[in-house]
Amino acid sequence: MSKFSQPSVDSTVALIMTQNGRAETKVVSTPRKPSKGGWNAAIFIIFVEAALRFAYYGLAGNLITYLTNDLHQSTSTAIKNINTWVGVSAIFPIFGAIVADSLLGRFKTILLSSTIYFIGMVLLTLSVSVIPTHYREAVFFIALYILAVGEGGHKPSVQTFAADQFDEGEPEEKAAKSSFFNWWYLGIVVGASSAILVVIYIQDNIGWTAGIGILTGALGVALFIFLIGIKRYRKQAPVGSPFTMVAQVFVAATRKRRVGQTRQGWGICCEAGGTDIEGQPRKRTLAATNQFRFLDKATIIDDLDASSKTRNPWRLCSLNQVEEVKLVLRLLPIWLSCLMFTVVIVQTHTLFIKQGSTMTRSIGPNFQVPPASFQSLVGLTILFTVPFYERVFIPAARKITGHSSGITMLQRIGVGLFLSIVEMVVAALVEAKRVSIAREHGLMDIPKATIPMSVWWILPQYMISGISDVFTVVGLQELFYDQMPESMRSMGAAAYISVTGLGSFFNTAIITVVQAITARSSGILLGNNLNRAHVDYFYWILAALSALNFCVYLWVAHGFVYKKVEGEKPQEGRELAFAEHLDAKT
Image 1 (tube, one colour):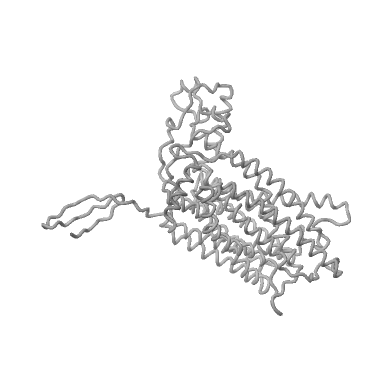
Image 2 (spheres, rainbow, N blue to C red):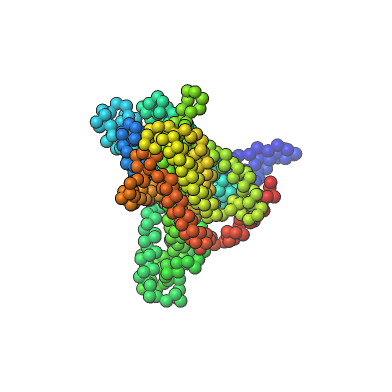
């Protein structure tokens, strides 16, 4: 018997030739294979993000060297300028997320912001090459902040857009999405490490024109690659301002603050907007929770609501809408308790570089490792840690906890926060050793002298930084995507990114306060002479603040309630069942 099939979306119409020569048609149900999305689409976006991170870290990774050596800024001024730029770059994504979720959609926002970023890179290339010297600094900083605008639209949209390629309604795609965040971060690290190893060497040994020019070219290639995959992407339409939905719940709850909780409430079944929207994932109904009970009054139907023919969204909100606002409120304490972690991250591309620049960096008789290139040690550590985490740690932890990811997102973040404390303690001890060697050789007042101490002493602090990133950074990415309302996921990505921005501002504030306090004594902390700058004291201050912050995080995480969806098992039950399914397959 032979069979010929005609393709169909939901089923296959088969023309079957029987033994007596008669033709019969039969509808055969077949699994529906998505024509868009999945890894086939996400891999394009991962590659593009890796290329953009190549451009970003090729600039940011060595920026302190350019500011101090070429623009002749002091160390503290350069650090503050970098912190301000990084901070602004991380705050702008909040506005970019509003544009993506409310107006343009994620795909168009990525395309527009990447174009702006490319224009900034072109201007940056001109500023280090053909712009006259007396205008160079002004044009350079204008270009930097054009890049910040481009970052603002790109960063909150691209990760969310990539994660949107996986359908949460399909168990296999949902599991792939959890794994996606690990490989997404690995792609970023590959791009960043490549820039730090190759481009920074070119900047230090050939010139900044060649170095920035390579970054600009890479960005142009990235834009072209992004457009190649345009037919593979799942694109979601904008859904309106997320702040309006949040404001409506607070206004409605405030108006009914004196109404008794015994009155009838308005459930999701009554919501006019509860149906699926074209271009959006299927909307899931959230279960009621007991936190922030004062917001539940927004769902109560009072006499005015009952007598009205139409619902006033500023007086009456659905249960689903209220629970979505609760999701946002639950994430705020987590967001605040991760600020100190980003303060520690900042040190890897500021003080760690200055620390390494004073040490012996020779490999062989003729090769000097650029101090900024040691940031690649963070990336190399991540390159080894992510596969180990995926292939060894998760299966081992899963057998103990029954969780499909081995440990929960909050536990993962907490491990990284603890490691950041260890990182600062190790950095302080290494810096104290460096200063003692400088003192022994009479080099304390010769700031440009090379200390006879191998730069490989700072290897442990970079490695610990990489391991902590695998836990906390990836954990935050997944948490702020998974626990945000579906309509606010770009905002969730922006919130995660803005932690870095506020952390940079917080770092600047700490430096300013510490310098103001120590200015009364003979040795100002973080002065131009690194040998007398007491950097080790600063590291101890950060270690103490990080330890205090870690205690706050543990208290916040203990009371955190994960998202609950109607019709689904509690999270622990789902994770245990899925873990058993995975173990059975393996």
